[in-house]
Amino acid sequence: MNKRFMRVPIFILTVTILICVLSSCSEQPDEPYHEMLNTVPVSQKDNVIEYGNYVFYESGKGIMKYDRSTGEIRSACVDPECKGNCLLESPLNYFSQIVDGKLYFATMTAYTHEYTYAYLDIQTGIVTVLRICEEIESVMGIPPLVENGYCYYSCKKLKENGNKQDPQDYLPYICRISADGSGSEEVLCELLGESDILLFVYNGNAITHYDAKLHLVNLSTGERQIIFDQYKEGYTFVNGDLAFLNGKIYLLLKTNASVTSEYTKKSYKYSYLVCVDPETRTHKRVLETPVVSFHITNNKIYYAPFELRHLNIPEDYENNLSQITIMLASPDLHCCDLDGKNDQILYSNPTLNYMESFTVVQDKLYGWLINHDEQTNTENKKMYFGEIDFKTKEIVIK
Ligand SMILES: [Zn+2]
Image (cartoon, rainbow, N blue to C red):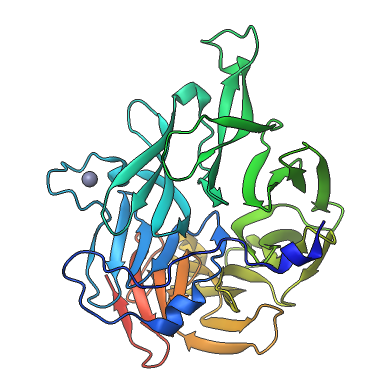
């Protein structure tokens, strides 16, 4: 593989000026921040992405737009006629990229269970549909991926002489279509194995996860190489979070190592943040300490170390084990360079849990926070989309 290409940032945003979204936007663009957006990490789980003054996130009721300048949250849908039943406001959305001012997303429609790949033009608010997959054709949970003017996605196709009504007769593929919505023909790039998951696309290659291994698939020739075998390397499974940056894959991998709660006697296995280089097929632990969640910008890793903690321990806890709040994240949110160096603690709060998705822009974290403050049991844990200012230590909970 050509070394030169590997160093080129993969998902280039050609945005050079901040696009003012809606007439209410009168603030000057944050220049350094936009410089920073040249390379966009892609993550399957994140569903939290910044763009200009906005942070887009999946709320469970649709894609929301958090205005960083005003703190206001509203639906990403700006259609005044909309009755709340559009693609942006369905309960299951998956997205991982904003390219050229367009938020590419996949969404499942209630009742019909159609799985639609589309994009939102952030400036105009117009949604363009790229592909609608019938329920029987759809591969759920995978966001669309954009590279070099193409949108890549997963979709099933009826095999030759197959029975249209029989889901077994549909085979999963990596497909592509032009990313601008110009209605080009769908191209079948590669047949996938059963539960072979498309993770990333770069330089015309796909990275998939199949049979506990990461694969590199050349989408022109179909050549497939194993680039990482998690069992062989002592890991058990991929633990949700993963990202792609500068030709490298970052993922959380679980081991069999665990700690046991002194109260509940339950054991908790933990994960490490591992970086895999598809080119050299090498991998390394970025951090020696176990990690529960992370977010990557183009030069920093933000993460919460794994730490088993207990809050709200009642005096007669032996009879009230369910009242104990178990937390698996350290109270400290850390930041380090991409190689794990220059580690520092940015923020500390013993009642906050940073286990969910977040992003960091200019000394502020935006994301899902679970606050166990004034909390007596785990049943009604409080989860919010909020903001933490690392400088002032102020926390805004929405
Ligand atoms: Zn709408």
